[in-house]
Image (cartoon, rainbow, N blue to C red):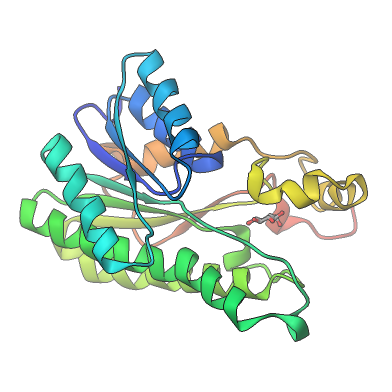
Amino acid sequence: MRLQDKVAIVTGAATGIGQAIAVRFAREGAAVVVDYIGQPDVASKTQQQIADFGGKSIALEADISKPDQVQNLIDGAVKAFGKLDIVVNNAGVEKKLAFVDYPLEELRKILDINLIGPFLVSQAAARQMIRQGNGGRLVNISSVHEDLPMPTNAAYCVSKGGLRMLTRTIAVELAKDKITVNNIGPGAVFTPIDADVEAMPEMEKALMGEIPLARWGKPEEIAGLAVYLASDEAAYITGSTYFIDGGMLRQSGSY
Ligand code: BGC
């Protein structure tokens, strides 16, 4: 087991990629804090999956854009399991709308969850890890859109572009404390965030046409890399993004 005796927080772990990571981490021996917002019944499904094989987890509700709730999340992990080794900043939201019509409220919401959230959670986690003195792992779930523009998705692209620089900057700053910081950049993964695309065959076909491997990714395929980046084996890896996108970023449009 690659995360034996580690304690991990996974934000947005009630569904999708976060759920797959939480379950996989528990399988690898970690005690997992399942962070969620507003849906205790869904979070309990993640917990149930973990309990089914005898894994350890607790569920904690936290709005990651609120510093006091973030601190409660970190403190709750330490109270339950004695320490904090790994944080996966996974929680994210998306709203596709024409740039010229984009409402400020939506922009603020997306930046709050996708960028301010990881900033605050990483900050509180790093303080805890520095106090512990044994280093740590911060793994952020970004997107191909930290790099790739996507028309009608400006707020999301901006948030992920910010996450890219958050990772690069704090990876350098936290290196002296042996805390590594990396991004995973998924492409099109079959989860609730893409319910709009999944429901429209034409849109789905167009999206698949942009992916050399011509299929959706699976949340479990993201979880595999998250385990590696969170493990002791990845101690020398920091400050970069690793894309899992079926080749999406390399498609040339001519093949
Ligand atoms: C977005 C999806 C999009 C995918 C590939 C993801 O980050 O959440 O909406 O389909 O990137 O473009």
